Every structure is written in structure tokens, then in C-alpha cells.
Amino acid sequence: MSAAKNINITLKIWRQKNSKAKGNLETYKLNDVSTASSFLEMLDQLNEQLINDKIEPIAFDHDCREGICGMCSLYINGRAHGPDTGITTCQLHMRMFKDGDTIFVEPWRSRAFPVIKDLVVDRSAFDRIQQAGGFVSVNTSGNTIDANATPIAKDDADKAFMAAACIGCGACVATCKNGSAMLFVGAKVSQYALLPQGKVEATNRVLNMVRQMDEEGFGNCTNTGACEVECPKGISLENIARMNREYLKASVK
Amino acid sequence: MAKSALLKSSIAKKYWMALTGLFLCLFLAGHLAGNLQLIFGDALQFNKYALFMTSNPAVKLLSYVTYISILFHAVDGFMLTYQNVKARPVGYAKSNPGANSSFSSRNMAILGTLILVFIVTHMVNFWAKMHFDKNMPLQTITVEAMGQKQDLYLTTNEGYLPVQQVAKSYDEATKSGLQTYIENRTEFYNTQAKVKVGEGYKDLHKITVAFFKDAKYGLIATILYVIAMAVLAFHLLHGFQSAFQSLGLNNPNWTPKIKFFGTAFAIVVPLLFAIIPVYIHFFLK
Image (cartoon, rainbow over all chains, first blue to last red; front, top):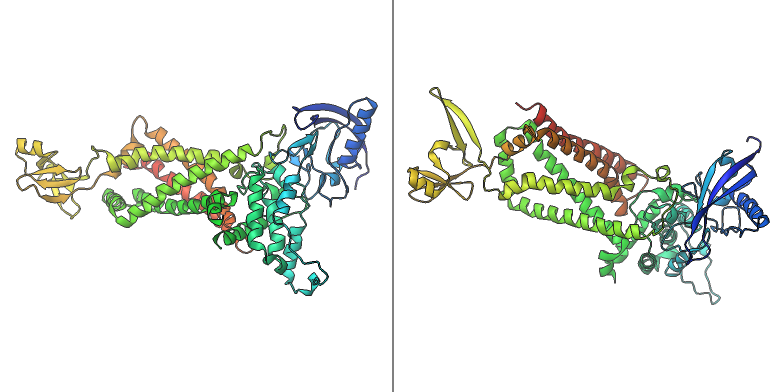
């Protein structure tokens, strides 16, 4: 890896006071950004500069900063989680940019993800979809059977794990030209549909989750495949196909 | 709940788009096979085929399924597009969709609308003439007998009728004293007995050739047709394989084969369609 150096950049960042306000892109200049810093560290640096200049710092979502919590978002230079694949924004590094670059930073855009402030959007629509069926009902009165006691084919277990890798960040919705949430819902449906524990409630699960998805105002999938490319966890389109199969099965039951 | 969901839900709409789309792919293959007779067959063969396609009851049933599929595919497509536009009220200032999706996949609605416009003009130019035009010509052949050229109507029972001996209507026949007249656009009737003695072929071949060889508009018609087929190719490039994904048919074994076949279908079928008017305009006769 080449040694870190410092670059000067121009940022065009979406500023919006609250959910009701009309936002706009503001331009900020930031100098001496280390290429070894992460994108979020760069935003921290910018916020320090803004505070020193007595300007309200930029609100953006972040939590674990190691790519597993699904909290960070950001549409950077026209791409969800920025110009790299298989990563979240916290894993995006400033070495992906050049000295003198202008970088656009926008919030996820979807009717179902309203902006709360600046770059922070409300992703509770995902929670409501999950609550509509993304679970298995287990009696926890003390005689719970260990999940490992049920034999599961390695192939199925692997596929279920791959689907369960979804961190619910919403990049699929943000990058989809239709604002569709089908990769997310497909992953959540699949992770249970592949396992014996999930089969019991499979019919209601897929019907309820899809109904909730439609009610939230997400768009329809047209199989562009953009979600699969931008997903930080590499969730495959096969999960959407599996959800389509599950839905058809459930609908004709 | 399940019943209404099979029409209204976002996933059900995909099923319908896929099923109607795949049926229309079958229709395209059939239509192409028919059209290729313009290159590889003669006028009579083509007109016989046209008669079969407009009279056979099984074909009629299929044609209604085709009309319904086109309408459903278009209406469903417009509804999906409307909802999809609504799903993102505020767009991005900077977007780089080329980084993660194909041109075709992002422009299915506009490509589909262009195809719909083409279908309407195409039906006005050929389908409507075949079905409703009162002045649709009947197929004739010119034979030379004893140094004299004579035009003959071909009849569906493999017979001939000299054009000069057939009146255009019963009134004309009684006035001119001709033994035969044309009734119901294609049927030959005996003037005295008023009974059907034969039936001619609507000359769709002549209409088609004249359309693309027209001195004034033939070239532009040919160019527009080729453009329409290019649009169709882009629509199919995404549409064919997308239909399988929508129906839930995606697995590591079959999907690459479906994608390969879909790409071949999307290139070969529109290309063969496009070659036909080019052949007629530049090379026929």
C-alpha cells in the first residue's frame, strides 16, 4: 500500500434543517485530509472545522465504524456507500479520492426513507417490514430446543447465512432507480425460508412482509441488478428470486 | 387476501409482466417465421399464410391472447413505472447508474413505449388493411398466352379467374353482363345464380412490398422499421432474462444459460425482422 498523503477536497453536501424544511446542497472546502482516513473521519474533520467556524455541524448516521452495524449510509458521488464495492461508508477510505476532487454527499433518497436532518434518514420502514414477519416464533418458557439440535444441510445453512449477512443499511433502496426494497426483503425472507425453523411460518411471513413493503411506499423491482452490485454484504439477486417463488407458493395456498 | 394479492402486490405485477412478456417473445418468434416467407417464399405462399393467420380458429384464439398480452404488458408497465417514479420524490443531484446497471434495464419503460408506438403504426399499416380495408387488392398473376398478356385472379381452390371477366360488384356485373362478381371483398360469385364459386387471396404481399418500395416513403419506412427493431433488441436484452428472475427462476446452473439464450434471442430475432424490409427495399426484383 502506498504511503498516506494529504489531499484538499471540495464537498457538496446536502443540508436540511429538519424533515419539513427544504434542503439544498452546500459547498465546503476541506484541506489536509489524510488519504488514510475513512470517509466518516473526513466528515468528523469537516464538522470540527464547521464548529470552529460557528456553523452547525453536519448530521450523519454512524455507529460501529467497522462495517457490521448497517448504520452509516450516504450517497457519495452518485453511488451508495461511495466509489467502491462490498463496503459500507465507514469502510470507504479517502485514498479512493484524488487531490482537488469535488465530492457529492447526499442522503438516501426514497419516499419510504424521509430525511430527518441533513444526511440522516428514517429507516424505520425496514423495522416495520421485519416486524411484519421477519422472525420465528419460539416458545421460550424453558424447554427451548437448541437450534443446533436440528440437522440442516450445509448448502442450505450457507445460503441462509449469506442472506442473513444483510445489515439493513438501505443501500439497495438508495441505489435502485425504483427505490425498491426487494433485496432487503428477499434476504430477510430467504434466511428463514431456507431453514426448517422458518418453514413453519413461511406462508404468512412472505405475504405479510411483502404487504408491509408495498405499504411503506417502496418502488417495484425491475431486475436492474443495481442493488446486488452496491450491497456492502454481497446479497445476491437469487434471494429476490427465492422471495418471488415463496410469494407465489404462499399466494396460491 | 391471497387472491387480491395476486393482482395488486408489487411481486404479482412482476409475475404478470414476466408471463405476458415471455408469451410475447413466443409471438415474436412465430411472427418472424411468417415474415421470413417474404424472403424465402413467393407471393402466393405468403398470402396463403396470411389467409391462414386470419381465418384459422386456433390462430384467432392465439391472436386474442396476444392483443390482451400487449395491452396488459403495457398497462402494467405504465402502472409500475408510475409507482416507481413516485417512490423517489426527491432525486439525486449526482447519480452514476452506469456503475451498477445496464442501459436496457434502466430504460425498459421508454423502450417499451417506443415499441408500443411502433406496434400501433405497424397494425395501422398492415393488420388493419388485412382485416378492414375494403380496397385490399386480391392476388393476381400475369400469364402470357398466344402472345397476349392476361391477368388472372388466383383462387383458394387452386383455380384461376381472368381479371377482365370479374366485376367489382353485383351492380357492375349486371350492367356489363359479366358472369362473375366479387362479394365480401374476397369471394367470387356467379352473377345469375348468386352462388359462391371461389375465393381469392388478399394480396398482403403486394401491400407489404409496395409499402417498403414506395418511391417517396419506402426508404424512411425501412429506416424507421430498422430503428424500431433496434429498440426491440434493447428491450429484449433485459426483458428476456428478467422475466425468469421475476418468476423466481434463478439458480447458478440455469441462470447463465438463460442469460446467454436471452442475449442471443434479443440480437437474432430483431436482426432477422430488420433484414426483411431492407431486403425488400434494396434488393427485391
